[in-house]
Every structure is written in structure tokens, then in C-alpha cells.
Image 1 (tube, helix red, strand yellow):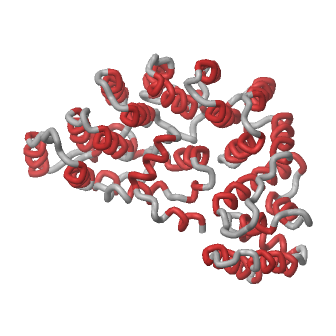
Image 2 (cartoon, rainbow, N blue to C red):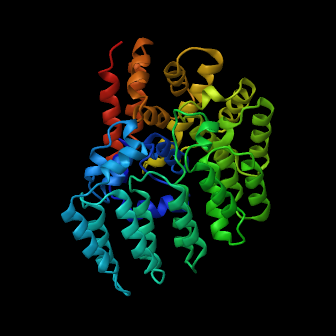
Image 3 (cartoon, rainbow, N blue to C red):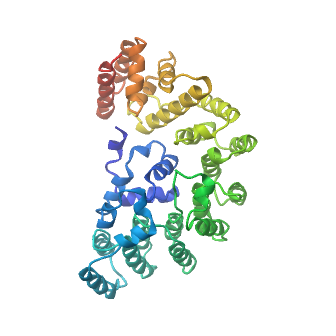
Amino acid sequence: MWTSMFKSTTPEGLFSLLNERGVVIGKNNAGYDAMKLRLALPGLAAVALAGIASLFFAPSAEEAGRNTPAMREPAAVAAASMAPPEAIGKRDMDDAAALPRGTGFETLRHRTQKTVSDPAFTAAQKFDALWRDFERLDHDPAGAQYLLDTMRLLPLQPSAARASKIEAGLYGGIHAEPVKRSLVNLLASQYETDLTLSAAEQARLRANPQVAAMLARAARSPDAEIAHQAVMQYARAGLFPDSISILDAALASGTITRAEYTKELGFLLPLIQAPEAQQQALQAIRRAGVSDSAIAEDLAAMVLLPHALASIHGQTLRSLQDILAGAEPAFATPPAPMDFLDLVRYSDWISARAAIDATLSGGSKEDRVATLVMQENTDPRGLLAVLASPLAEQVSRALAQRGQTQAAQQRLSHLSLQTGNDAAAFRMIEEARIRISQSPR
């Protein structure tokens, strides 16, 4: 249901928004990218990464053949990269046709689309072609950023050599601020993620040690824009011995804002192993001077990440429980027009709070959500938020088992009377009413 609210977002607009929040989108691990999306844009995790990619280019023959983890091995990638002789000749001709300086954006986009959608080219060849075009577009920030962001979507095997090329490009010219951000993001995309490995194992994976070192260097850069983006990406790559000290230094120097500091430190919280260190990090978040509601929103997003709760110690969970209980998201008054992002924030908050409650006290997360949304003083938009979320079916069943379906229907009916001419809100409420009426006991 949430996805329909963002159908009008263009690829360029979406990437611009993600760039501002330091999100790297790649194809090496869609699950990990979805986690980063959820942190950067709470509630937008429902936007499929494959859908974002399809806005830019169709899958190549190399992508279509990559169906198993074994296919990611270097030998298999090399085999998949073989192109027929006629394609090699075609590529040689394309190489000779260098991008003319002064090329307009629409011409550039058409050329780029042609390159990335051609199944005769391997991902590495596409990257090289786009990189050559980038090097000729240092005078055009919009075109350069478009090329860099397109490169991030290529299904490449990360490599130290490619990362070195990107790092050289980052420091080898005078770039506009958006281009610096995109270069750092492209560099960070060379850090390979594999959630089947421990953090320590992942840090040793292929080119990861070199890429992490490059990001750490960039995070200490005297160039404020490079340092800002690199601090964000270094934090999201994982927990390294100097991760927290780099965040602390960036906050002290003004490289990142207090809000960015709390978000990134919150993201690292499940990766910190020692109970005392977790508590220290949480205390640093609370002392950073950010509002309780903003802290709760970021921590709720973190709690909802896969496996996060299993990595957080009991005392830290109880502290998180207190933070969330004291920072229930407030809805706008009056309820019309309906603010859909308020519903998203509430859904994340109540899901996270219920997950912590269930972990500490036992029982079902869905039962806890049903209890919270049916409390007498709970805004009926809280019930609507849950019934428009992935928890809708389970919570509807819990309400039916408790004999609260009729009471829930009445709350929604009362809410619909307050929506005025807000057709989208009225339709959402009606869908929620149908959903709970059809739920089995």
C-alpha cells in the first residue's frame, strides 16, 4: 500500500534523495541494501530494489545467468563475461566514438541507456565505458552524477583495482559537491556485503580491507563534502576499530550533524558486542542533543532490521524500550488531509516497540501490537497505520481472536467521518475495514 504513494518519483529524483542521505544501492546483496534504505528513508523499505534498477536498464545476459551464489565466483564471472567476436568488434567501434564535450543531458542519457541495456557487454565493460564518459564530463555536474549513480547499479564483482580507480578520480579533479558525494558512494559500493558471514569475516572479504581503508582516509579528508559522505558510508559498511572514533571526531568538527551522528551510531548498535559498550553508545546517542522523537524514529528503524534484536543485550533492550515508550509519534491535528508519512512512522514505532516487548516478556509481537492500538487513548490512525503495514494480516487475526473486530471497525468508521474530502485516506480506511472483516479467528 505504501509503494503507491511514491509511484511519481523519478529515478533521478530518487537517486538525488538517496544521495543526500548517503545510501549506496547495489545488486550484491539486496537485503542489505533494503536495510540501508529503511534507515535512510524510514518506511520506504517496501520500494523494491529490483524495481529501482529496472527504471534504469533491462537485465543483461550476464545478470540473467547469475542465479546462484557460486556464480559470483571470479571464474564464473569471467566465463559469463565472454562476448561473441561481433560484439567485441562493435565494442571497439563504440570505444573509438568518444563522448563529445558539450554533450547535452538527453543525449548523454540516451547513450548511457544504450550502453547499460546492451546484453553483448559485460558489466565490467559497461563500467569502463561509463567511466570514460564521466572523465570527459567534469564540466557537467548533472551528467557526471548521473553516470556515477548509474554505475552503482551495475552488477559488478567489487574489486580493489576498480576502487583505486574511483579513489583516484575522487582526488584527481575539481568536482562539484554532488559529484563528490556520488564518487564516495560509488567507492563505498565496492565494499562487498554478505549477511551469511560474521562482521569480522565480511571485513576480510576480497577487496573489503582496501575499500574500508579508502573510506577511512576519505572520512578524514580536509574536504568537508568528501569527509561528510565518507563518514556516513564508513559507518554503514560495518563496525571497524575506529568507526565510533571517526563518528565522534566528525561530530566534534561539524562534519556531520547531531541528527546524522545519532542515526549512524544507532545503526552500529547491534554490531557492538560488549554490553557495556552498547550502553555507552546508547548514552552517547541520548546526549547528542537530538529530540526524543527523532532518536526514537531512528532506533525504531534499527530495531526492525533483520537479526538486530538478537544482537542487542537485555539491558540495552530495556533502555530502548523506555526510549520508545516515551516517544510515541504524534499525529497531525486535524486528521484531514491524512499525512501518510505519519502513518509510516507510527507503524515503524509500534512494530519496534512490540518486538522489544515480546523479546523481553515473551508472547507474540502481533498480540502486543493489537493491545497497543486498541488502548482507549490511542489515535485511530495508529490502527490504520498497522492495518496498512506488513503486520496487517496477523494483527487482524489477533483482533478477531480477542473479539475486538467490531470495536476496531467502529474506530475506523469514526476516523472516516473526519477525513473530509481526502479520497486517498477514505479509500485506505475502507480497505482496512474490509481486511479486518475478512480475517479468520
